[in-house]
Each structure stands twice: as C-alpha cells, then as structure tokens.
Image (cartoon, rainbow, N blue to C red):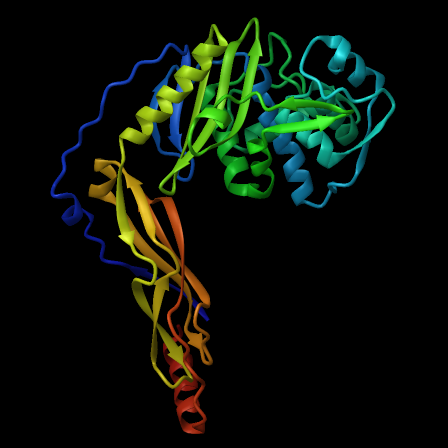
Length: 383
C-alpha cells in the first residue's frame, strides 16, 4: 500500500472576482507583540519580537511542555500524586502573595489537579511541586527546561525557575513563546483544551481563569497571562474563526485593561486580513480513489462537512491543495470510511487539514480472475 499525493485543482480567484491585497496598518501599545498562524507558523505582524524580556507566568508554557512531553512518553500518569513540599508551600502558597492553588503543606495532589492549578490558576505552588516531583529540585528542572528549549528551537530563552517569578536571568522572546504555544496546540490537543476551562476549584476555593479573552472574545480558547512589576502585563492568546487559528503574544503593557484591549485589537486586525471562502460543501467530491478487487474500479472521495477557509489575498494567490491518502483501497469498501486528508498549503506549510472519506460502498468481487488481475496490477504498478 502506497501513500498517494494528488494536487487538486483549486480556482479560488474565480470566487473572489480578483480582489486585491489591502492590508491595514496596525499599531499597538504593547512593547513587544507578534501574531502568527497557529497551524503553519506564518507571521502576520511583529513588533520587537526577538527582544529578550522577563516573561512572567507566560513562561509556564515551558513548564507545562515538560509535563505534557513526560505524559506522552509514559514517564508520568495523570493520577500520579506529588508531594507539596515546604518550599512549594512557602514560595508558592497563600502566604507568598502570588498566584496559588492553595495546596496544603505535605498533602499529596494528583498530577491532573496540579496541571489545572498551573494552567487555569497560574499556581506557583503547583509549578514548584511539578518541578520537584519530576527532577528532584526546581533548579534541576529549570536547567532541563533551558536544554529542552534549545531542542525546540528557542535559541535565546533562559529559565531559572518553573514559575516565571522575577529573576534577572529568566528571559524569553515573544517569538519563542509562539513556538512553545504552537508546540502545545499541535502536539498536545488533549491537554491544550484545559487552557479554555473558565474556573478551577481546589481546597474548596474556586478561582476563575485570568485570561480575559475567554469571556469576551468569540472563538478564544487559550492560553496564558503573565504579570510581574518588572515585566508588566502580558498574554499568550489564541482564537479560531472559520477553521483558522490565530495566535498572539503581547507583552510590556502597563494595565490589565490595556492587555485585554490590545489583545482583542490584534486578533481583530488579524482576522480582518482574511476573507472566508466556501471551499467545499458537505458531500462534495474532492477526488477519486482506485479500488482493487472491487465491483467498481474507483470510488469518490468526499468531505464529510462544509469546508470554509479564512485566507488572506496573498494566500489566495499562492495556495496549493493536496490530497494524501493510503492506496490503493482494497474491497470491500464501506461508505463513510476515512481514507485521507486534504491539506491546504502556503509556502509549503499547511494552514488547514480536512479529512476525506469514501462516498459509497464498493463490494468485493467473487471472480478469482478479477482478483488475480488486480493482484498483478498491484505488483506491477504499486499504489
């Protein structure tokens, strides 16, 4: 069985009547800012994106990356319990004056709860506990964070703790924060969704998620706020519209209200650059797949649902659409069998992916000679 790739003819410009590129200018109060496509990593706006800054709690994205990767590797389990040490309790608990989940001294807390404490409440006690539980000390954990950051392409980031609390050597760039955010969104969707939860209760104390986008911005589902006196107010935010996920990072703002307004403005500006196009309706035929040993030689491949894409004018000029499926299909074939993916690419980077499935059934033939002929064709031609 071979993986087949078919370039699908895709005449977007006919639907648009030759609309011209008309990008608006954008200005922001944020000292540093960046707007990217979460799927492809294409950058649409940046301001001082490579300046090293104190990231505050936004650096907890790296802390959680370490946790997510350990879970995926089987080194941790969600029901595994971690001890709340005196250090975690004192520096990250209620007496610290910082963000906390109010975990009790010497209690044992499940990883799944510590994750929610860190992701929803930005809890410092949870992050210190995770660091100690995974590497024995926060210092050892921080060293491994920096090492892993280099492996992920973060060439400037330096981590000195698991919390983002002030340290003159604990620094990142907003571009690096988008790299981490995309890694989490694309590789750990089952954990990313926790960032969208509005509230978490621990020790009978309910705390709301601090991300202002979750309440007021349509399509927002993440990701992490940050604040210290040295860093100012920052936010890593993400929102989806018509299948297009945009990711922003803003930093260096002076008030909570500025953070909220600038985040919304940047997302609004980003989404305005796109025109939504109806690419396929549910049930539209994308292509055909060869069927071996069947009563029919070919079966239509269709989309299960409507496919709408938000595209910039530049992307509409450059987009490629490619179909990948594993073939040839072997009869019998059932209707609604997912067999491939249509990818929409700009500069070789996928900005969207849509599954395709078989439109109808194809029965296996009873003829020995027909099956033998198809077998020979497979050996001679492959997929």
